[in-house]
Amino acid sequence: MKLRPARSIRGIRSQAWARYSVKKPRKNYIKALPHTSLLVFQMGNNKSNYDLELSLISDQQVNLRSNTLEAARQVANKYLERELLSNYFLKIMPYPHIVIREKKRATGAGADRISQGMSLSFGSPSSVAARVQKGQTVFKLKTQSSNKNVAREALSRASKKLSGTYTITLKQMQPAGQILN
Image (cartoon, rainbow, N blue to C red):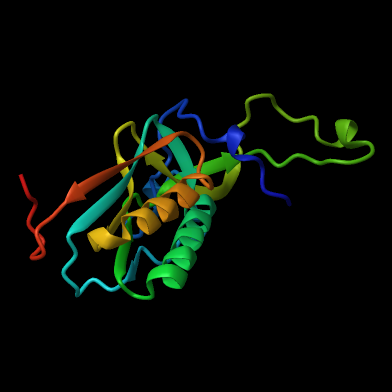
């Protein structure tokens, strides 16, 4: 079945469905968790001394599916690898653990007769998402201050893959990793 558009799940309308217990399976709200597309959360070289930290900060609260976070990660990482080699460190901050439920619908000829189910039905688990609040950091990027324009472009490209609006902030750091005043 095709993936539904992001507009169907990006708004935060109700409580989070994230209850999955390995130790007490009878207390689960969700019997089987869908897999996450996002498996790598840190990329680049974390051992260097960087003096610039950029953050991609959300301007509104939104649900971000794991596949959208993965697409944003790939586009930013590919651009950074091509331009900076390994002179950066990129980290994804939110973890997708909110379970998205969808009611399966039939499409095509005669679908109106086949898929007449309950309205507002609960649905079955289809994917996982990260719940991002307003002002929360989504991506954190560390690099040298001479690479500021490349880093800003990488985060800008990543933000175009995500639902919602985002702001890129800069923070100068000392080479040892301490923040300057």
